[in-house]
Image (cartoon, rainbow, N blue to C red):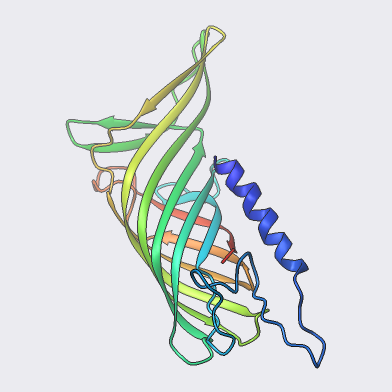
Length: 250
């Protein structure tokens, strides 16, 4: 499902570059960048009304962590997807400064080569190296996977042209729905999958800061979680980091 969403996002976003650009001096364009950009609900918005942007945003991310482990030590295939449904609230008449608020769903997958070990007596989680492979059991891959919902709030700056340069600065507060460790082994030539769900100290409340910097409906994206994945001070301390590409479709 995530792969299908990636493909659809890029097809629609690339198609926006072929839109009419209104460069002729005596021509006026009401197009906006992205799919359905001119529409605000069931009917077209008025031409003299402040244009609204970045109301449906997909953040295609590389996911990693910092803290007790170093950044960029994990697999490059640690991909994720954030889906943001936003209200764009103009703060000045031409909407070159606005407030963005809405609802965000985040899927995170961090591919790594080690393992999480739970200590239910001390309610802590430790990230450590794999045990040596046995002759009949071979480690293949491991992932930490999470799903969460958040409320984003951001201050948006853009210049007046529809082909505008933009900067978004904001943060999110949300709830971690689930966190799962998935490990894949080869046992006597057969694939075996081991899933671990019940982390005793996973932080359900999450809060982060983020930024987008880009042109029109494309932007570079960066996010940093201010609190660690695990709450116990004796657990391995890891703060989520996301970086990637944002595509605004509406």
